[in-house]
Image 1 (spheres, rainbow, N blue to C red):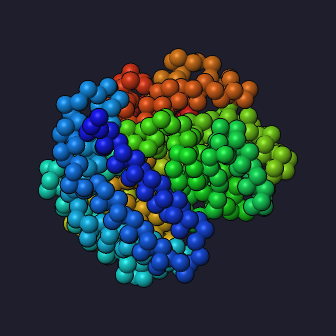
Image 2: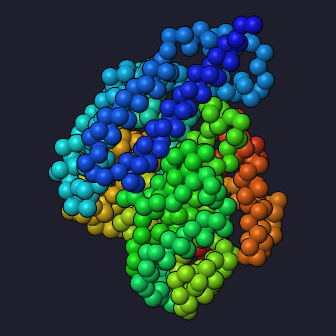
Length: 496
């Protein structure tokens, strides 16, 4: 019996997933475990693997198989899978293998050097590698743009957030800029009159790690299918069957590593709960980076900073870090909702966080569209940080434009996903409150199942079955509505 065209495609994309599996684990090792002198060889190996994956997706037999598969009797899930296969195939065929390899080598070289250059506040040294990363990102953007009919920057953004358009992001972020500064000012005025008990450190790293591991268990992380490690920049990597999350520790401030772990555990739970029967296929992967960030921010912001959850984990803090008055539940709620503009995005409070994202979006869009050059970034960063966050970053590259891993790694177009994710998360929890008004009482009692069950039903189990707009519509009853985030922030920080 002849093999169906669809089945032949499944075989090809299963092979591709296995290559991606290897690349993900090797990339995690490069960031978390690899000795420095291994980077050149590792970069070459990863570039070779990228070319192999690109060759798999550009196999000349695929167009005919896809054309034939359309006429075969496919069920709804298979039709969705074919849709996602075609998207991957189309994007890959717009890029020459030469560019794929050059991008991989340049980003590996730049990211590896960045790990040292950031610590040394070395912007000029960073720029030597970064100029090549920008050049190749622009070339990729041009290749994608001229064949898809969208702008160069949004062609890169579409890789992370399918269907997203700059005009929509401009409108969303433009509206946020009309109310966010005023809300930040109101909250800071309100909090200026509040007295909190300060944390008494230091907090030994070994004890912070044990606290983090117990918290991951409470949040449902499957340790038989993943692990926690250290890296320069916290991230979630690996594959659904073997999820790797990382954090970084500061002996003087456990709150950062704690929330970093909660954040990455949200990513991990999504990956660990994707449908196992389709995880090797495009339809079985996470829907988009905005949806992925909605999971991490559901955990970090909606759950992790919720007073009911902080009351639940107060005994865990006392158990691992020592009993002190600052760990009382009411005080913890105040500490974890404190609004204080800071330099570092990943450490930012919930209210000022969108300002950090808007700043990066505006800079990287101008960079890819050729309106500015890489050398112009520090001055523009300084200007926008002062305007949006009220902080002076002149000469402070380490805590300014060198702080993120995304640009040295060539991930232009990713940043909008963070604030889109915060908006999706707020919308999820508005829906959860309608159907489960007692969920906070249950959470304070240690029962997190209502939250996890809702996410499992509406997001995790759906993977990429639906395009993003329909996924959110089915989950919450409406398309993305940014007003949910505004209402959530006003309620949490102003009681409004």
